[in-house]
Amino acid sequence: MSMVSAAPSRRRRVKIDPWRWVGRFFLLFLLTFTVLPMLWMVLTSIKSQFAAMQYPPQWWPAEPTLQNYAKLLDPNGSTGQEFLRYFWNSFYVSMVTTILGVIVAVPAAYAFSRFTFPGRTFLFFSVLLRNMFPSVVFLMPLFLLMRWMGLVNTHGSLILTYLTFGLPLSIWLLKGFFDNIPIQLEQAARIDGATRFQAFFFIVMPLSTPGIIATSIFSFIGAWNEYVYAYTFLSKQDSMTLPVGIQRFFTEFATDWPGLMAATFLMSVPVVVLFLVLQKYFVRALTEGAVKH
Amino acid sequence: MAQVVLKDIVKTYGSLYAVNNVSLTVEDGEFVALVGPSGCGKTTTLNLVAGLLPMTDGDVMIGDRNVTDLDPKDRDIAMVFQNYALYPNKTVYKNLAFPLQMRKLSKAEIDVKVMDAAKVLDIVHLLQRKPRELSGGQQQRVALGRALVRDPQVFLMDEPLSNLDAKLRVQMRTEPKTLPSGSQGDGDLRHP
Ligand SMILES: Nc1ncnc2c1ncn2[C@@H]1O[C@H](COP(=O)(O)OP(=O)(O)OP(=O)(O)O)[C@@H](O)[C@H]1O
Ligand SMILES: [Mg+2]
Image (cartoon, rainbow over all chains, first blue to last red; front, side):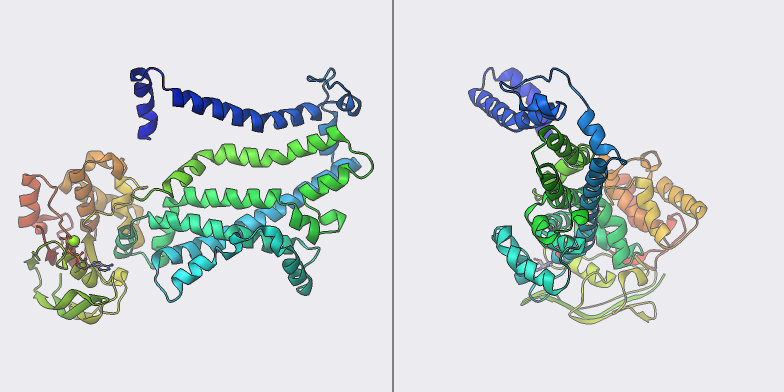
């Protein structure tokens, strides 16, 4: 906060700070690097199949069309039906992962933050064990496990997997949050007549909403974008999630680039919306959780 | 209104004795201050009486009840914390109302009691503010208010008056009996 208000006065005093400009150019470079492909994606998505394949490429489509989007979002057409089903599957899997993740991570992080119990440190670090290895390492073991449990080709297999991937980060992030909430607040609440649970629910939870929201976004995005496990665990067309579904769907015979790009764009919409709406909590979470008062 | 008895209370952290064998009787209506150097165990003692820390050994009686194994909420005490511990996301009004809400009083009763306490402590004009928008002394008055809205048997106050201005300090120290609900504070009150 103080940084923000200090910046303008500083700029007036210091004339030219070369490092500041180096920093700006670097940011500009990074921005171009990330935005250009997305721009190209959007531009391609409003071209016709023919225009998309032209060489030299049309930078700006001569006859922009929303045809591709209309086709994807039309619940009566076969393309639309399929796309919307993948979309729903992805949404369902990500949502359940997120909700279960919060339900498990909040009490776990709270316990790690507030209670001392035998094996606490050991448990806390073993939570991270999963994250020490690249996730593909677990592909075969998890597949065998899922088959043994009869979960292959169900969304449950993905939800369980994504939970094991997302939980460590959620628990660590939330623990940082709870650590920063003075224990006296809960004590005051308990003296004021609250049970332990009420103290947690009425006092601690509201104070840690930024953290809870940030962890929710993390697990939602993680689940929403995941490809390899979804590709391995699900083989039935109608249970597929978006990343796999889109890829199968549009490259089955010949790649329909504009259609693919439109679908990809639509896939990024929920994440972008989520981020824009909850952005302020998110930033607060990353800074607040990190700094000890 | 009750007698408070501490019987041989002990609190250890590993090999450190934070509170070593303290026995103390505070009579009904009596006003006792624990004084001692920093780190001598004043806060710890108050926390033990409040039931916020598990006691290593000893007993605490309030009135004729042995409260040693009771939850803080069932001990019928009020406490002002050294760092005030105001609920940062609630307005001053809601801070004062919280203990009454937890005891399931009606909205009207809550309003009356909160306004009474606010008048005594001269914080009526601050009721809609959040704790971070208050000065240190104002925060302390809110913390006092949160203890005073109820009718507890014991008041525990941890350095409660250090930030008050002279006038209010004298008033608080000499007559906690003029408080709104007419509650008599028996308790451990201390200040540096
Ligand atoms: N959680 C803890 N773990 C280990 N030692 C502790 C813990 N809490 C307090 N202590 C120790 O217990 C002793 C008593 O602490 P306490 O907070 O009661 O002191 P105090 O009398 O309130 O001091 P002050 O006037 O500075 O507030 C101190 O030596 C302190 O270091
Ligand atoms: Mg102290």
